[in-house]
Amino acid sequence: MSDTYGQGSLKIVVIGGGTGSFMLLSALKEYTNSISALVNMADDGGSTGVLRDELGTLPPGDVRQCLVALSDSPKIRDLFNYRFEEGTFEGHAFGNLLLSALEKVTGSFSEAVETASEILRVNGKVIPVTLDNVRLKMEWSERSVILQGERVIDADYFAHDPRRATLSLVPSAHANPDALMAIRAADLIVIAPGDLYTSLGPLLVIDGIGEALQAATAPVIYAANLVTKQGQTDGFTVSDHADEIERFAGRPILDYVLYNSQKPDSELAERYKQEGAYLVEADPEILGKKPYHGIAGKFLGAMASRDKHKEASAVTRSLIRHDSIAVARAIIEVYKNARPAV
View 1 (cartoon, one colour):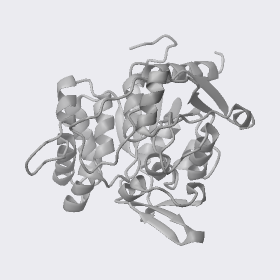
View 2: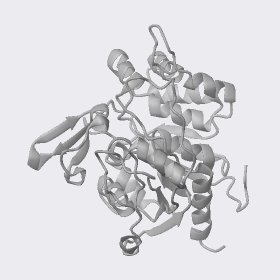
View 3: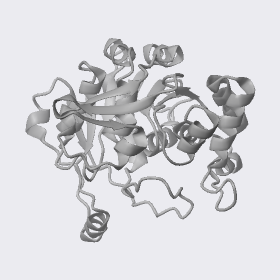
C-alpha cells in the first residue's frame, strides 16, 4: 500500500455502482486502508432483476462488484464472480445468489453484506445507499412520457432531451444512515464514472445524499465518463455530465472534475467506432467558468474484452475503460494539493 503522503489511513468514499466503481475501488485501495463504497440500489436487470422479482430481495449485483473490488482473497473473488452457464442457475453470478440467500437467512441486507465482506476479506466497507426496495422512474412531464425501471431506462433511446426529465425512486427512498455517516467522516469523496441516468442519478436523488455532499468538509471529485452513451448522452460534453450530476443532487456539490484529454491512436479509434462510442468532448472555456476546478489528464485505458460469461439479458456495455491507475493517481494528487498546509 502506498503511503507517500501519509494517506494510508485516508478515509475515501467512492459513490456509484457497477464497472465505474469497480475500477476506482480496485485502484484506490492501494492508497488507503479506509475506503467505503456507497452503492446504487436501483438495479433490476439480468440476474439481479430475477432475484428481486422471484425472491423479493434487494439488488445484489452492484454490491457484489464492489465487494469483489475490495476483496483481499483472489480465489473467493473468482468464486463470487463465477456465472453459471447452464441449468436452473444459468446467467446468475454465484455472489448474487449468496447475497440473496444471506439476506433471507439474516432478514437484513446490511447483515448480508457484512457477512459477505467477512467471507471475501474485504479491506474497507460496502454500504448500500438505501435499504428501501425501490424502482427507478424517469419522467418527462411536459411530454407525458414515463419510463419505469432501471433495465427499461438503460436500454432506451431517449426520444426527448434527458436533461428535461425528472429522475426519481418509487417509493421515495430514505438514505442509509451509514452512507450519510461515511460522507460526513470522509477525507475525500469520489463520484465514479457511470451511466448518468441508471447508475449515478438513482443514488444522488435520494433524500439527504445531496445535502450531505454539499455539507461535506471533504473535497468532492467527479471522475467524468470517457464516452457518451449512444441514444442517451450523445453530444454531451464534460460540463454537461457534471451539470447533470449536480442537478440530481439538487445543489452544487462538486469541487473538482477529472476528465480525459487523451486522444486514441488510429487503431483504437477504429475500435471505438465499431463500438458506436464517442469520447466525451472537453469544453475548457465553459469548465473555466464553473465554481469547480476542471482537471485534464491522460486517462484512456485498454479496451476490455467481451465476456462470454456475461448474462444474456444485460444491456450491452461499452468496452472502453479508464486507466484506473492514472485516475487514482490523479485523485490522490488532487487530495494532496487540496489539503491545507500543516
